[in-house]
Length: 208
Image: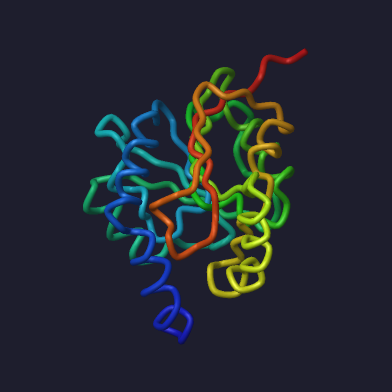
């Protein structure tokens, strides 16, 4: 275990994102997962315990060739059968319309190219498929947004590249998604990270 894992990742991210409030957020969001499910950027598998019982198999994708030991342990405790894929860019190794549900939690604030990632989400979703998101977004309040800008250089270093000042909701809508339900609010679940959060379920809009 290197210094980052020991002194930053373990106490701040893995444990800090596994609070009671965060567990409630994950459980409520993942109730909407159905059918063939893809999770983007699974990290240490913090979502895994919260998938509904009907989800027995889960596909995951990230830049890492292997899932972390913590993710594997959490999958085993939930009896999830995992299929992990990796990609060095933003062309995913899945056919179009491969999944009924795609899950992103605290991932779109870190990816280098949001538009490319969201285009792949839309491509791999079945028509009418569900896109479940729990993400940082830039606040509408000017003072809060200014705090996000000030905090971003530090969060990029200490929180896996997190940029809480991104306009992620607009990016999702620009990628061709419409919201079935959505909530944007200041999060009690992330008190140590400055950031308004977006919680919602989106579907790909019908082609024009």
